[in-house]
Structure formats: C-alpha cells, structure tokens
Image (spheres, rainbow, N blue to C red):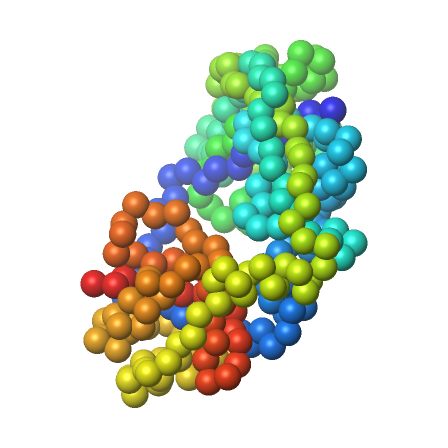
Length: 293
C-alpha cells in the first residue's frame, strides 16, 4: 500500500482577468470510419496512463485488489480502459480511512521582512522539497504569493526542518528568497481506495458494436445554416460565438439523442456530451456543448 503524497499547490491572491466574449457553445466532429477509431474515442489506453494509474488498472484486471491512499481517488476513469486489446470498466471504493496531520505553508514571494534563518531549496530534506514547488516551476517564477497544503506523518516531521517547528523563516529558490509561514497541523481525512475491474468487451469490434447499437443516430434534413456549422466542425473544433436559430436547432437534435458519454448537469437546457453520429454516409465521433434555448 502506497502513501500518497498529499501535496496540493494552490495559487492564492491571484486574480485572473478574463477578456473577450465567451462562446455560446462548441462542436467537433472527428471521422470514425471503423471499429478501431470508435473504440479509441470511447476508451482510455493503458499505454497512455502514468505509472500509478497503470499499476491500479493492471492490478484490478488481475483481480489483485490494488489500493491507493489519498483525499480522493487518484484515478477516476470516465470510460472503459483498453488493456491488451480488451476493455474493462474500472471502479473504486473507499475501504478504510484515517486522519493525518496536514500543514499549510504560505510562500511570500517579495517579503518586506528578510530577517531570520535562510536555507536553499536544494539543501532541504526530501520531505520538505516534496512539499514546495521546484525553483524552476512557474509557481516560483511569477510574483504572486502562493500556499501549499502538505501532509507530514510523524517520522516525516522528525526529518523536516519546516514543520512542525520551523528552523528557517526563509527559503532560497535560486535568486529568489521567499518567506515561509507554517500553520498547523490540522486533521485531514485520508481514505484507502480499492480498485476493481469488470470486462466490457473482448475487442474493439465488440465495443464499437455495442456503442453503435445503443447510441448511433443520423443527422439528416439539416437547414443550410445547420449544415454550415457542421461543415466547419468536421475534423476540427468549431466555436459558436453567438446564438442563432441554426445552432439552437442543431443542439436540440443532440439533446433528443442518446449520448455515448454525457457530462452531468443540473441544467436540462444544457447539452454537453460525446455522441456517435452518421452524417452524409460517414460516422463521426462528436463532442458538443451548448444550450437548447
């Protein structure tokens, strides 16, 4: 069982200005002319996963009950995972929980007070380097103050020079000296998650056949305005900047169909999902978001 490093880097005191107008919606249509293309869109390839998710999936497929710890499941696939040509639904469940000590570390990038003990990032113990951004990261390069949340168990606290009794007030990140403030510890709940897998399909043909039977629908009898939007979206992502009757009617067509995957939303007038569509004799994997009204 691996202990997850519960480091959460959070930008604070940072206001992101948004300029320009937001799009009314978007539409993308990727040709999916065969079972392989459909299955690729509809699944996650094990080869594309990082080490930890890959470990969990392989263990789940082997029915070895792999586990991971954290404040949330470290891998939450929203579609089947392809493993050696077969497809599996991967699920997780919390089987245990415990409380661990969590510390809040605030980094003041341009401190007015530079008195106190100082240490270079490279000289910090590994447990403290893990809890802070690296000197070459963008979090250190910009001028905004930041905060991190980090879990230190008892043995790690003994190794640390930053918690629970800081020995240094300043940390040198290359040419930048940062003042560090430490608060905590506070109790944090960490859960143990077990991963399991169940087979969905033994081949891309079988998976594609299931999806076509359940969700494939035909776009037909479109107006010239609707066809114009669809043409722009084929092989690309088309962003709709302003509402129009053609766009609303097109979204309504998708709202009436069964998506392969849909984003959960509490707004019944909002469509956000992935669809399998036949248009002018070609099958497409479609991603659409927009309002019906």
